[in-house]
Length: 485
Image: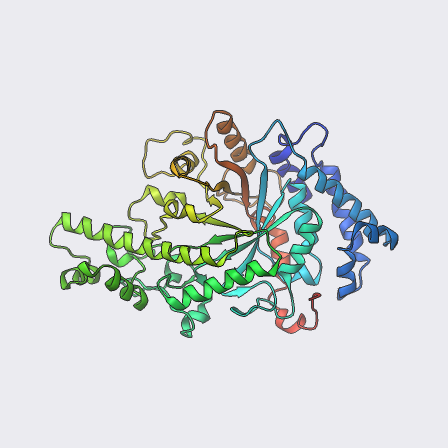
């Protein structure tokens, strides 16, 4: 694991000024040792007093004569934090470096949050995007809208205190339209439906319960959730993910069929009749139910109208969301730029048209391949240049305030790491970041302000698995343990 950290440091070495030496393998090793020594000194379960001891002011910290183990650990943490936050006049392009993190109960119960943020900062990260609304559950306590993922554990607050203690920003990562299967099956929320009667699970796997953006109840609940997250005071911003429909079911044709789209929920059909009365005809209903049209030209126009309507339903929901999130909290959109390479993409995520509502945008650029970038003749082959160029061109034409781009890159354990298991799905992050920096020097991607690595679990799978192991027995073993309120 330590070697993985050292290898990952290639990402940030070129981004640090001469006076701020990069975090070395030795300092990472010292950080691991100091953290384990500090954790070993704490009683179990960890008390509210032990939590508070981490977050007092510096003056209190030294006047109280903390334990040697905490003093030693805190000193190294601050050294690493200064290095990660150091400005670099020679590399103004990547001011922000973030990592996507899925939290677990052990992050609070056993202070594994320290391990997560130690590794993130040693990698040079300045921001953490914390999965805060996942499968219809929230990672904090006191929600009026959705159930907590862990009763009695305020994991989001734990992350907020530790991240801000280190000078890191914390964003809430929200699965906007991907809720819990139980919520859909029980009728508590209206799920999406396609014309074949498939389940989103057939398209995206277990845990993929998508709700209908046309449902007034869904819009009300989602708006209340985001208002609530903003009011916690834990987060510097919110990232909206899964603001789309599911993929096409794997057992179906790949394109050109209106039944592949997830617009057959009752609320969606009602909205369609209200907004497109001109298409509320027996002929169009036959087209939706069978995929058959009188002629190719009419079929093309009907398909365009159907997809445009579904994308518009998402945009209407975005407008509702924007009203609920106060200006002090940055609102960001996570989206698939590859959607624009396929006019029949059933996700209907016309994200570029929604960018005026957002302060930040994170296109998921997972397609880097040095054999394809920067030029690939195939229109349907996604490349990082195609993806970012389409976004950049749209932003350049936008009037007024423009969102900042944070490119999401897919990461894996680095070469030489014992955690690296074949087959590799993506090129090394060091190669992806180096490519983006080179293109920036050439004048491309002027709106790009940083990168966000997806994800902690992909970079450190063994750490992720051991932290996740505490979630299964949580209902039996963990309910007597709670974090400070």
